[in-house]
Length: 146
Image (spheres, rainbow, N blue to C red):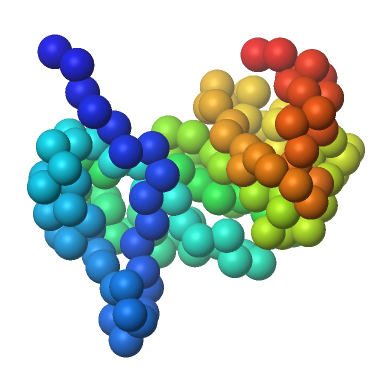
């Protein structure tokens, strides 16, 4: 049986925001659309709230965690990635160069990619412009073909 998965969803942390919704609200929207599972990614803030997302979705098996990692945080980012995978059981990692302000083909991304490889987790990359043009992503992918 095939499953439909919404690959990029977000929760809103502040109830006062115009578009607030938590896990129950998200699942209601997914049910309405006939979608069985959803990948939940933290917003790409300077220090993405990976732990907060984990806490929100841990009791909802239909929701799949994905860690947003900011390589500009250096060693802290690598440690967060390891914690996200080993303790919070995220399924994948997302990099957002255009939001965080780095080039995806920069050597500062390599420690994140090395850790993702070691942990056998896929990395998804927000593409477009401002450091994450397709040719830059191609350069990174050629360095990390796995």
